Image 1 (spheres, one colour):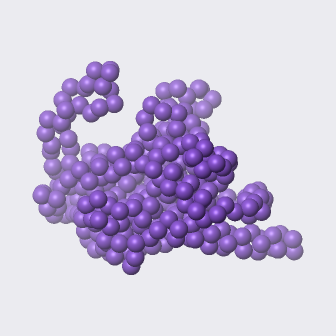
Image 2 (cartoon, one colour):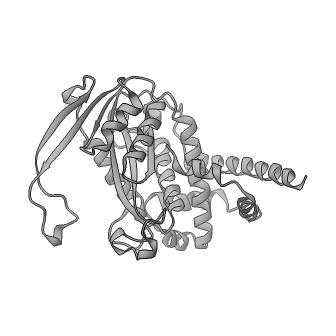
Image 3 (cartoon, one colour):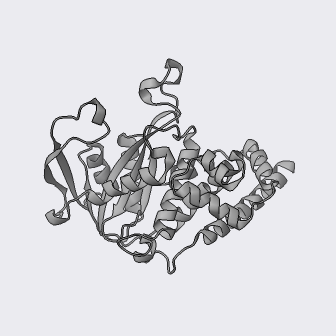
Length: 318
């Protein structure tokens, strides 16, 4: 599920119309410059370092990120249908927006879009495709929304492996019913590391594989691929890098960055094992996408939005 799109549909108002009119009236950067900016963002550069590298303002970089994230989310929502996955692994990765939970002042506690934020991810172990993701909280409601969205995109019955998060169990039943082979892999860890190594996991002493629904194949019960994908996210998005000031200040920009990352990963980036993008391996597309094609897609999406703004303007003026 692509969370930003649902919110965007509810927020089309005169205020949004005015903001879009300002964006459309701006001069457009050359394709080469926009490709360079997007490449920098994808490779883990912060907004300010990207603006310095390309000689543009940080506002220009931010607006391009917004447009790219919106376009990527819509494109993946459209193309990730009847996906031929067979062996999926699910996990969630932590980040925060604005302020960490432990440092929140009383007036910001409970404010939506501030504090811990989790990205739910599903990866196909065979094609390495990311068919679905969701940015939100780590609770039962988001677990159900994520799993239901994933189920709606699949072509075949699948085997799914998750960690021991209890929210997955009810979510699987709500999303798939009995049409899934589901297992939980619980890792058993030793004593916690001392303070100087608190960002390193404790030693894994063993694993416990537990079938939950259907008839999962024990040899396929694994979460290694999705955990490796978590590392790819932390290395590829500055907002996920620990102990830096590159964290997200706004939830919307965080969602845009995640959408851009997954589109690039699925359609453009050469996977080292597959030697091609995952979407090409899975048969979702018939060719290897380029960054220039992504920029063209952004332009077409902006043109469609411009027509929508014009129609809305005509509607409110009558």
